[in-house]
Length: 558
Image (tube, rainbow, N blue to C red; front, side):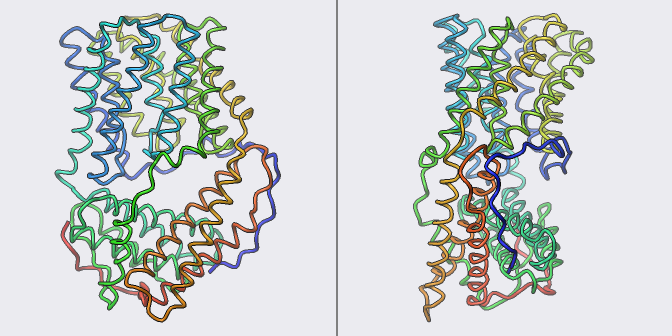
């Protein structure tokens, strides 16, 4: 295990980065899934409205269609629930916005409603861990609806259209399960195997081993969460669980693990072929008893995570309100663009918020230039307008996983074109207003983030340290027993691994926060070292063999 020297305490005021903010990364393994899904979800409602000559209703249809962007990494049982909740959340947010728009035309009141909605959406999306694109799409739709002309009598029909499109988006999101029912679990397991192999390649001591260990621990934890939420434990899922155990073994004993068998198993999980065998050993039937214990344990309710998110919610409410009012003061006709820009900034800490702000501004400025280039093509007719928006929908999801700014390059012209569904507008004015709102929203939003300090970040690290110590002590007590209860040691090992992942996430989030008390970096490093040593001891006690040169040709069909 690592013998790294504990790091010194970080300064209370942290420098904001510029280098690397715009660097492109590798695309997501499944970038094409949300890209294709959103096109399939958006196209039928929009083309239907085009045939009916009612493109003025496209915004309400898109409210439901854009729900297809969510939950692509979840197993299909969990995806069904998540997508249903996203659709309900989208329609509920839209209902609040439409009712507000129907009751008042006072822009000051509407901006306040939009800011409060954005704060609630941010808190709920983070607490439920719904995943990308998070609250941004919800805020985009609800904020735009606030400034759409509306009467009380129109609200039910508009909500019905959004709900119908949301139902279609749900079907689109679930459809791949007919062809590859275990696809998400296989991808999560492959990711865990590859991450564990990368850590094993460092031997636990080479440069970058600590970062590789944290990434492997997070990937293994994510794979378990995926498998435990997948529903019935079919033979294929049990085989995947055994592979995740192999990744856990490599994480616990990297110096003694050959990474190549792990990578070979990860490659074999592509497609729909058999799940590769984990290797024959005596403990194979017993090592997964901890999964049954975890499935029987009550899940932690999502609302219990709202408390620590209060500073982020306050940042969102304040930043969106101030951005919207600043836009109104400048005479911009669409203050919701500034509001949405501010809402899109807020990440886990101030450093990440700063990075997102730079990415947003750069992406939007390049995006308005792209809009100026394609506007003549989109203005050839309503069909050209719809098809151009569909193309930008695809490109956004295809590129955004490489870097947020690259996706924003396509989001910006798409948002500008959507405003023309109700009628053609002058491109120069749209570009000017979008640039002003982008700069105002980013500046005001970031100032609000600086003003609302997240003092709870340090407390989160303390709570995570306590949780790790308790989990480690529990595992140590079981190690000291001559015959622990069946599955107890496995459950304790997984509980300790999850606590270590939470500790690393809490420490990373707090390290990028603005002006707070000094963080216990030495205690974090020591807790991680002791925790991973205890994990290694549980592996040795359970007798799980290491991956050296294992035959992976046999497997279980999906």
